[in-house]
Length: 297
Image (cartoon, rainbow, N blue to C red; front, side, top):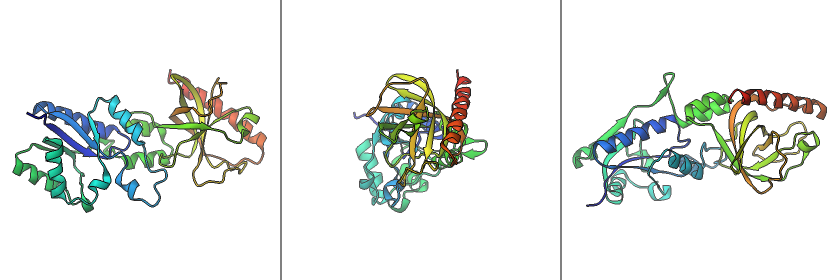
């Protein structure tokens, strides 16, 4: 007899607290029916794939999402959006039954799938009723009477409220990238920075932030500037530049991948009239970031 699964489906951008509530319910329901829990997920949100401007739309890149699922001990399988986008609900339903041996289904209250999102919760409930498959709809997980969603977290990051974003996510917002060569202005000012190539998809909150930095297996404190360098006006790109100054760090890491975790926003990016004024502000940024990070210990 083939293994049957309790299945949930979604994009899970951020793998946030609301998602993990759904995943916990999936595990409980699977155990109740003696099934194995399985998450079917889209590595990229359909909205990103369909957008003419997909830049800075994701809380989690596919590899980050995969790692978070692994961290939470979830069985997953990625779905090919192009194979699903034009499916009518009945056809997609048959694929779920036959391809994934579905023995139960768990979805959020706003779930829909298939062409034009015609596969509604009502459709699924009726299909499960006919097939005698247990069907569970989970209410929204809330924070302060507000639904926790990927959209809410994106807005929270855009507003610079990093502690709230961390609370909603259930983990720090992270950003990884390859260290590339920059203009070395930070080094001239006494604040050498690692410039990161983070790709086009990851959301980049603008401003100056206190951060934790992972280089290899070691962790460091630091502060990060994400923006367009208005003081020196050397950046000619549509995407902001990510620069991180790592405290007490003197190694060359060009070509290496590092990861930063956002702890708290220090200020908005500012245009200074002189480089000396910028240097004074960087000293203040370092002192404030060190003070914030010290409280974490």
